[in-house]
Image (cartoon, rainbow, N blue to C red):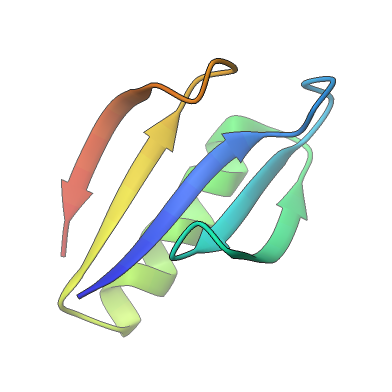
Amino acid sequence: MNTYTVVPNVDATAWIVKLEDVAPEKEYESEDKAVAAAEEMAQANSPSMVQILDKYHKVTDEKRF
């Protein structure tokens, strides 16, 4: 199962989508856009999971596809 992680960058000016919390896939200007992109990637590569992290890298939401 692939895991896509949505996390803010260091200074929280952008949001990054990572695959398996290793390789950054792409950077987005808002959390909503990053989450939507991660969900789209997860649906296309089912079974997958999307984890949304806060600035402290704590999971705030998790969705399975």
